[in-house]
Image (cartoon, rainbow, N blue to C red):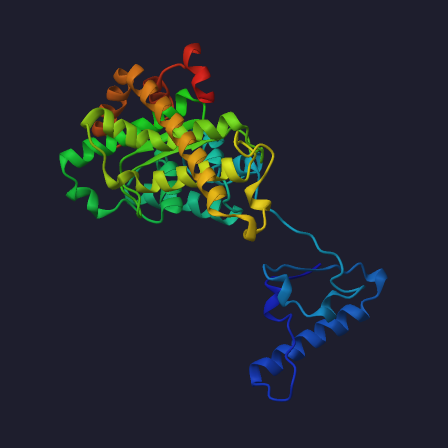
Length: 349
């Protein structure tokens, strides 16, 4: 078997007589590869495989029948595959055996096998730098945060005032509590450690990678996005700019639900995305925004109801965050509490 990685590096021939030395050499390489592929005896059992992320850069001559005529597209690993990759890489380390690879897999949607390998290596190097005898679950979770949020814990953390820390703790606790009670997903981890541009993060995952979302799930996610701001308002009687990104994402989701996904009373089965631009007058735009705002208002009311009814849990979670900075696992589940039947219906509000 002959394997050529990044074949697009040699797979595009230059045309014209003004070629530099490097381009001329590439042409000689690709011509030689093509000659050899044409000349292989079928009885020699020679298989030539090439890999690329840029198939448009492959010369057409290399894709004719008898050459690279079979195309196999590789996708990113699925949830079960990511768990198996974590099991594989973690097995090679001296670890404490407490890492839940199912949780790690749920938190790493969109990561490639190389990303997962690098994340495990990062966890191991962090443990080594801290002179830890074994790699722990916290090292793996911290490595995932570093990868997803774009860096280590920022030095700005030391400049946080107590008032800011209090506000961050209640903000993230609001996200976690409402997301948990409305079944927007599995609340895996809550942190008020700043990384990248994020001052705090609540990790909420799905236990499936089903590409379809029910209306109730999107409605719950809408409320979850607003819950940080509503928690601030409930506790401090004021809001901050920390909710700006939440409001942006919630507004985008509400507009999509009304205009494109068919979750609209005003438009029924009509998708605004399918209407020609010349027909999208101010009246239609105004109707979309009006109904999207109504969805946001309903989500806000749901948040307020849940947070007031669970104020003790909100306070307990926020205080624990202030003590620990990061909460996950069984401790987090205990602080969030078991969902009562009475609030299950709130997700459809």
